Image 1 (cartoon, one colour):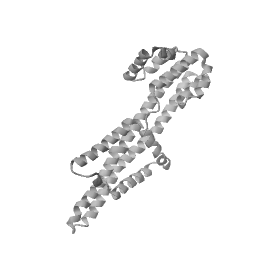
Image 2: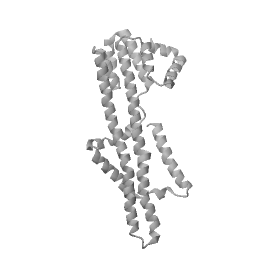
Image 3: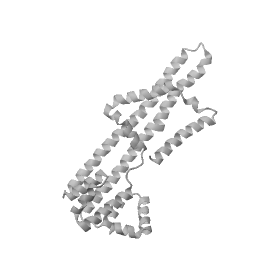
Image 4: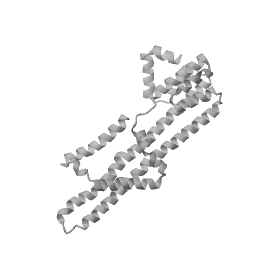
Length: 269
């Protein structure tokens, strides 16, 4: 699980509950089944109308992608490509085939296999760039789905509030029931705004952020693959790939070289 996502959601929801308690309320005051059913059911139904059923079935997958920790460590990717560059110099390009088959990263495996097959560099870049474009499109669908749900949730909350107020106006002859009825009516709006701004929209933005991160790492892998194909030495491969990373990660790599010089020299030899 991604610590930032979990901590952020916990902080936001915790702040809401804390504010409620400080005002003398109780968490149970925010629990009412009927407006929750309306907001959740209405949001899901309206979202289903805008997208295909296949996309709705992928909703649990999109939620997992938004909550899970990043699968790729940029420095780990650099070190893996440096290892391949070292093996290419020692064993030749064809010697990379067996190692490439064992790679878990499909994109990196595809790139190395294209090099082993003798594919021209221009075609390798074109194929891998097409893979990135397709990946971004898939991820964008997930982010758009969550953003769509985030757009419908507040509207469904307002609808629930209006319905509650209509019900309350029918009870004007019983003033004692008006207070609880108004409170229950506005819970629907609260649910809609909370779900949109404390769940759907943050997850949508996290999916977009993750997609951009993954695309940047894939672009770095392309440069590493092409550097290996052109016969660059491992240290040059490392330098080209590190150029894609933030100064913080570059400094971290430099510290690793200082703390473990033999290991880094072995990787870049």
